[in-house]
Image 1 (cartoon, rainbow, N blue to C red):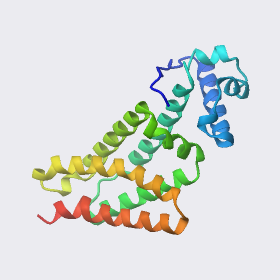
Image 2 (cartoon, helix red, strand yellow; image 1 turned 30 degrees about the horizontal axis):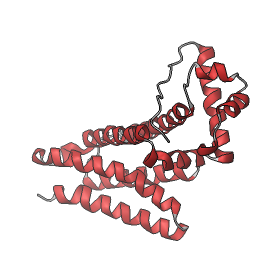
Image 3 (cartoon, helix red, strand yellow; image 1 turned 90 degrees about the vertical axis):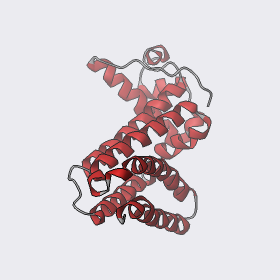
Length: 208
């Protein structure tokens, strides 16, 4: 996917919000049917019940629609993370348990939504999606750091932030890998990833 201009107009009036929702819903339906590579502006507009000219008021091109769907997913994951981290952990065991639960939730989300899987396959060819993914990993890592930092010596906080950033970014890649192979192998990959979270993310700082 080329690095096209993808700036979108944020809808403020209810009618505009409804049109944007209709466009994104139509795009999701078409991605399920034929994949994001097969999306066409005219087909999205027809499915959404609007004219192509109206759609261009909100999305300058197909890439902007893909990016909006990607951002919806990233925001959903961030909200899931915030919900899971409302209560401060009292022990390292609670940290590990929370991280494992989150990992499973993210995996299930990807399992049950073919649109998400299709969109993130495009990250390797789309610089804007790559940047979105990286910034989301940074945002989620910051949430995790605030959630668990008091359980670790302050001298390790900088290293922890970097490790969490790396772990959050690898989480998405691991889930996509697990969904790309046979079910049994994918399950084993996920279990290994959880073990790595426990050992590498928590163990190396906690015992000093």
